[in-house]
Image (cartoon, rainbow, N blue to C red; front, top):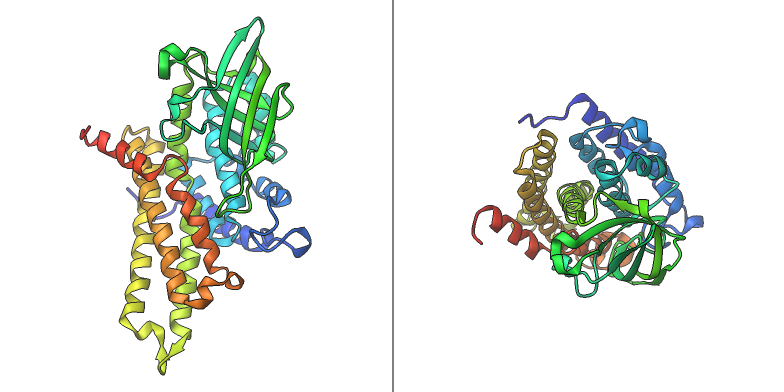
Length: 385
C-alpha cells in the first residue's frame, strides 16, 4: 500500500480545503456562523459546483468520475476548511446512501432522472430506512409496500432521517413480503411531491445544526412501478452497500475537522501562559495533545485503508468500513472532549466554537449503525458469533 497521495488525490484534497476556506464561510446575512442558521442551501450548491456531490459518479451521469480514495481525500479536505459539519454531513449522507446506490443498482432511466440533479445540487437526497422500532434492528421495519396494478402503495413511518425536511428525493426501504424477513425488503425512490407522502415534523438534535433531521409518513403513498430500485425483495443488498460506503467514508470529513482542531489546540498550548510558562510545558497538557495527534493518525490510516480495499474489490472492505467508523467516531468524540478541557472555560462557551465540535461529534457514534453494531460486525468477521 502506498501511503502518499497520488497527484490527483493531492489536487482534490488541497483544492477542497482551499474551496471550503474561501467559499463555505457563511455570511451573517444568510444565517451565519456555521451552525446557527439551519441548512445553507447556497453552500450546498457551491459544493455541487465544485464537484463534491458527484465526485465518484460517472461523467456520463453528471459526476467527475473519480475513484473512492480520491473522493475520501476531497472530503477530508473540505472537513478541514469548513466548520459547518451539518452541511458536510448532508453532502456525505446524500452521496453515500442515495447517489451511489442509484449509480450501482438503478435502471438507466433512474440514473438519467436523478443522478444529474444529485450531482449538480439541484436535488438533495435523503435515506429513509430507520423507524422508531427498527434502528439497530433495521430489518424489523414495518413500513409496507404493496403492488396494486401499475403502482406501489406504501404505508408506514420513517424517523431520524438526515435532511428529511429539506430533501427532494428519498431512497426508502419497505417490506413487500413481511413473511420473508430480510428477503422481503425492497427499495424505492420517492419524490418529495409523491401523493400520500409527507414530512411529519423536524426533530431537534444535539449537534450538526446545519442539517435538519425529520420524520416521514407514507399514507397510501402511491408510486409508479418504476420507482422500485433493483428487484423486488432485493432491497437488503442495496441498503448494506450504502451502509458500507457510509461507514467507511462518511467520517473522512471528520478527519479534516480533527486536524483543524488539533492545530488549534497546539497553537493554544504554545501561546496560552499560566504560572509563567506556556501550558504546553505541562505534561498533562502535552500528553493530551499527543493523544489527540495519535488518534488522528490512526483514524486516517483506517479510513484510507477502507477506501483502498474497496477500490480493489477486496472482500475485507466491509469489516474495514466498520473498523474505520468505530475508530474515527470514538476518536472524534474523545479529541473534541480533550479540546474543550484544554481550552478550559474558553472551550465550554459558544463564542470560541470549540464546544461545537464536541456536539457535532457525538452523533458519529450513533449514525450508520451504532458503535455497538460495528463491534458486532467486526466480531462476526472474526468468527466470534
